[in-house]
Amino acid sequence: MCGFVGFVNQKDVSTDTINTMADRIKHRGPDDEAYFSDESVTLGFRRLSIIDLAHGRQPMENDAKTKVLTFNGEIYNYQDIRKELEDLGYQFRTDVDSEVLLHGYDAWGPKLLDKLRGMFAFIIYDKENQQVFGARDHFGIKPLYYYDDGQTFLWASEIKAFLDHPNFKKEFNEALLPVHLSFEFIPSRDTMFKNVYKVLPGQYFLHDIKGGQTETHHYFKFSYDHIDNSQTVEEDAKKIRKIVDESVKAHMIADVEVGSFLSSGIDSSYVLNEAAKLKPIQSFSLGFKNSKFSELSWSTQFAEEIHQKNTPLYMSSADYFDILPTVMYYMDEPLSNPSAMQLYYLSKGTRKDVKVALSGEGADEFFGGYNTYLEAYPFERYQKWVPKPIRKALGKTAEKFPRFHGRRFLVRGAQPLSERYYRVNYVYDYEDRNKILKNPKLNVDTGAYTKHIFDDVSNLDEMTQMQYFDINTWLPYDILHKADRMSMANSLEVRTPLVDKEVAKFAATMPVKTRINQEETKISLRAAAEAELPERVAKKEKLGFPSPVAQGMTEEPYKTRIINAFHSDIAQKFFNPDELMKIFDAHVNGQSSMQKIFTVYTFIIWYAVYFPEDTNVDMRQYVHRTAID
Image 1 (tube, one colour):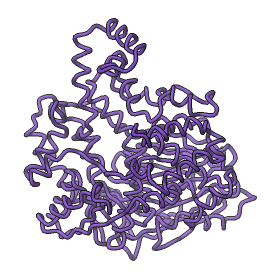
Image 2 (cartoon, one colour; image 1 turned 180 degrees about the vertical axis):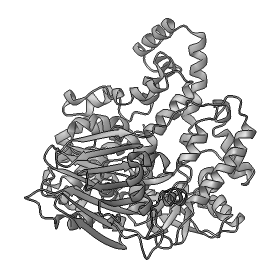
Image 3 (tube, helix red, strand yellow; image 1 turned 135 degrees about the vertical axis):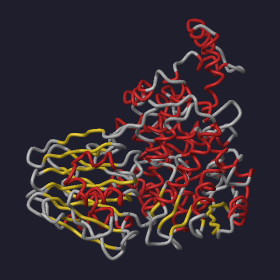
Image 4 (tube, one colour; image 1 turned 120 degrees about the vertical axis):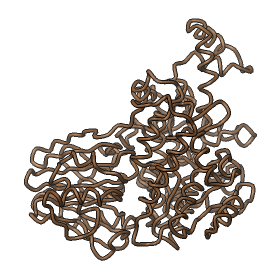
């Protein structure tokens, strides 16, 4: 695991710039640093040593000195690919997966990506063809960004590294603010910084050094093209046990101790249980000092039942709000999912004992775990028995009346799924954004950012469409994004055995009937877990990270912090403070608006962190007292 940076050389930029850029992401690789530079390109690398601790230094050159690699991640099938390359005549100097990538690209070019199983982002500088090649893993576990304004081309594992390049023009991409207010993330290649782009999951880019052009290509796209409706729950559960067991084994490979996150739910419990079959493994669980928000007793009891050590970690409401500026700094872009703060604290405590931790992300998306999927059943029945013109008429009529029982169902029942599902997940809908934005002209139909995702699977059932949407949005832009940033902020490598190429390949064949029914989510995964785990764990309903945010907002000193933020110069620049205070006052008086408040509040904190020159002294001092400038 590591972090890397690089740029195409310019006459007015010293190659020493690479050192400060790499230092900015030292948290991703505190064990080692190294650099490469020639007349065209400069590369920097920070290493967190996990495999072959004595070797594997990067940037790594091939024997012919024609290609140079920097790589972040793990390739779990690298030994198989290495054998293929040895059969082709390639010789290896190390036992690390990075050398397999270097020779593999030399042998197959971008076709190498089709062979890889793992989490990765890497850059290969091709001296002969004067190209920079960059690629990201299938589902977006590891990050990769580039900056391209037509004159300057930079790349890095994290956006913040660009701040130290003299030709990086730091500009806020205000046009995306309504998109962020809708989704709490940006579901596209664009970022909150102008001319900074994500390499998307399953994508690679080629940058021509001489001509300056950059082109992107998809090498992988998840699909439900091979659903097998003949499969049963029993058959799928059996296959899940086999494939998860194999995936956990692959994810356990390391030359350092591996631990595991453990919540009270089925996903992390199942992963821990499979790992414990291979070797003793220490687990780590997070709870709140206020027991109302803590389920540590579940975690510690399960760890005891499988005879594994569990380390409980604690945080308070004060911890939660105090680390917000730090979390926003490491996040690169604003993300208002409250669980980010818990994940930061969990990673911080875990890193004291281990360098690598397994985690259970991905099970809900691939195996059908979210309760929102259950709504497909009543809506499908409604659409089947009530003709479309009548549904539309009922929906329009319901919109005109005050709130009544069933009004929301009638309104949403008139909408196609492409509107109904993503809009129910909006933090702020179009009308709400018009109220709070200082410049309503910025407001757009943000559904255009995701409609193409539903179009890809419009021929499939609604539940499958919802899962497909989440796999392509929620999973990479929220779940995996915060998992990488919060863990690597603490120099901890998190591995996700359930977000795996082979696991996903199987999940894509499962029919709806083995994923979810009207009473239960993740049917087959739970059936697989029942053979391994206590019933109380296998059957436990999804909770996620419980959070004290909603209550904390109504208490001092956090209440005053939010009020001050909503009246700050940042709020006045982008929002209507009076409208923000209406939402906050309603929350204090019992009308829950936690996510709306937190989305704006975290944005204001993020903006103060990254654009301190645009903030007043009080806000600047509050944000930067955490020593992140």
